[in-house]
Image (cartoon, rainbow, N blue to C red; front, top):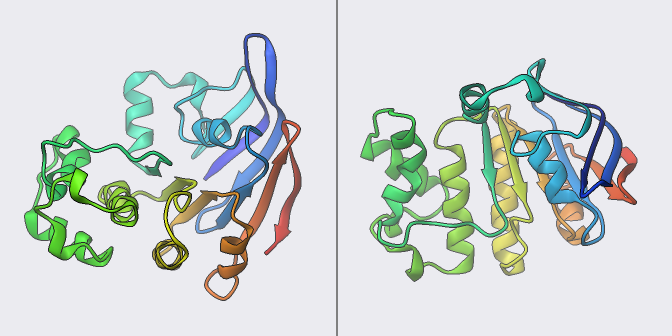
Length: 223
């Protein structure tokens, strides 16, 4: 579970986000929306510990992220998968090895059969040996999702995952996120695409959080 209690974050002495209080319960699905520059990415970074609040508290499973050192943050992040808006890969490695990197970095065994099964789940079973530059935008986003879930995280955070792909591929990615949620994963998706949020209605029981003016407005509104 992720909890924000009066959390604030600012750059250069000016607050970008202020007095944010929010609970992301286990197994919940949240959309985070708001205008460009509102701080959605910053809020997500607070949730997975890349940033620490300048005031207030962010807790992950009851632990204040400000109290965690490098090793503690690393252990926490193993439970949180992140799909970045600009997904980056190592171009000299084939797709399967890119997806397996989180396991290798943490010293865990990598079973090619497990990687292939995960790639099949995101519809990239035939692209395991492809180099990242050969992938389309939609393929890259699905590969990023596979990489984010290979550690079997409890929480998945996606920052504008459909921003650079067409509508059909957006719906396919949304279906994969809904499937993860049905498996009990907590899902947080930042998006400016209201059509995508409406398309989720028959798939998941989601809540919408709107970030504007540095605060969460209409937090908890039902989809």
